[in-house]
Length: 112
Image (tube, rainbow, N blue to C red; front, side, top):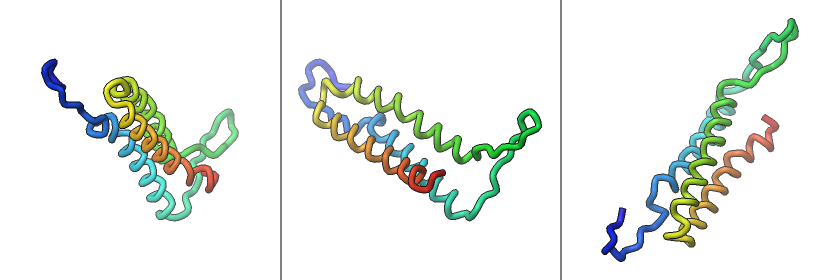
């Protein structure tokens, strides 16, 4: 934190809330790559009321959690840093949005 007498301006690019969502998108993409490279997977079957249906794998649920938990961090970053460094904050949010799109694109293309 800067003191009252300190006139130096901190950049939002250096905060953890800027990089953590990017790391989470990277982890989600890594999960997809590992899942796809380990070969075909049998669907998980769940029986409900005597009817078997395919269920999502734990990989899919972990991917969903990683993607969802980024949103509060991105919001926190925007609220915390926009007043101090609006230009840097917008750059960070753009990078975070690109990372989310990059992590979600294979899911939509491959209909996973």
